[in-house]
Image (cartoon, rainbow over all chains, first blue to last red; front, side, top):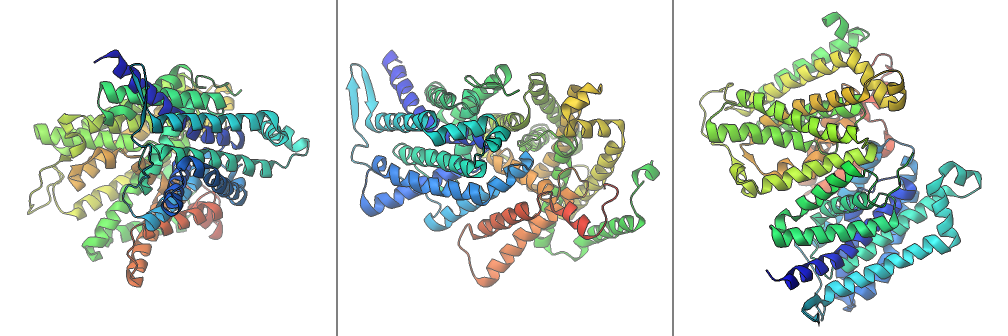
Length: 290
Length: 334
């Protein structure tokens, strides 16, 4: 096989990986601050994907434009979920939180199944088959736009946490829960905001990913698992780590699909996860909690 | 031995347990074919719940990938039977050590490298998924097309080869549950059990007081994995077909942990009560929706999710501790 083929597949994998990274960023932000593993993460992404399909059918808007309203809807969903339910579970044992979110996931998957039926759906954009040729390289337009948009959204989130007062307050909660309470921060509200932001992130990622993949109501768990693999590889709670993990997993999957068989690609992603957990349990960019 | 096992359990609880057991023994005589399959499913998840409980409920190690041990047990016994005609019980002699070794491998890697809590839970999912995709590509066991056990019409129940009427599987599972409860109770009252509880409550403190936490956590994983593999053997010979997607799937792992968590983690009776509640809710939904004439796919699971959500919010410790408080019985810990 010629070298350019490997390069093309690798670039495709990296661009897809950036979207994976954005999805995982949502999970990472939620875990980093709220300390709850969002077991309904993949299902939240499928909500966004179906929202995009509905909006596309109604208005024929480009998914990349619909990203803003969909992220806003998902923000509200996440905020209400955290404020209404998960806040009460913060001090409960992990298995209890897991099951709560599994229940949420079951509800979401089946509401989608009832509303949209079991068949795979997608959107057909005008540029679906376009590509850019740079020398010997051929890059799919959809993947390029998807990857670039993911970077823009992620950059927005980074700046929010870095430069705004609310972002700083959320980071304070994550660093020291008791300390945040002592200085008078409304921790429950900040948790709800964080969960909302995480949900908006995964909502944006879902909308973008619709350019690349179909969606079914049952697609949730595999995305949840993928997001776990990515954040742990990159470092649970580390924002750059999530993006890096996404790129690594995207690359691994693409190369495994090329060199072995596409159906075995998740095995390589999990193998990478196992290696990381064993030799660097805190993840590539993660800091070890005391 | 018996005296120690029943120590601290009030007489009326023992009588109640005996009555429940008698009811369970008599049930297949009155149940129709459909109800019997539901009851077998209940017993199956009660058993896997009890096995999972040893690792999570006693030793505090959260496994979200227990389908791995079911799958290894099921595939080992089924492959031996299909390829070499080896009987189920001999198959179990191979299946249990294989599952135990897999558990030991995961435990060794995780506990040596101090992978704990959420990370450990996700590591267990990772190994389960790894096995699922692996078996999807393993042609010796039929890959993703499935592994099928030869099925014939059997005139009599062949207990040795596990071929026969569903009622036979019912009684085997019931016996396994009784053994599992007795075994769990014996473990809890032993030195090992106390060490586990100490590790579950505070691992640092347990280590500081001289408990070899690595060794006892390993023991919990290996025992739990080997016990779970038996459920796999029964699964294989009861359903007669195995698909990696179903056996190793994350959905199966979640189904395994539902019963003990809903029933009450760390209690002996929780997994059993939990499975009765869960299957009861699921079947009740099915009957109710059938009666109302709803047959949109997903409706049953939707209501199931809502009920699960309600149980988690209303009874955070699970149904059994809640029920015990209601019954005014809190002393002791069966």
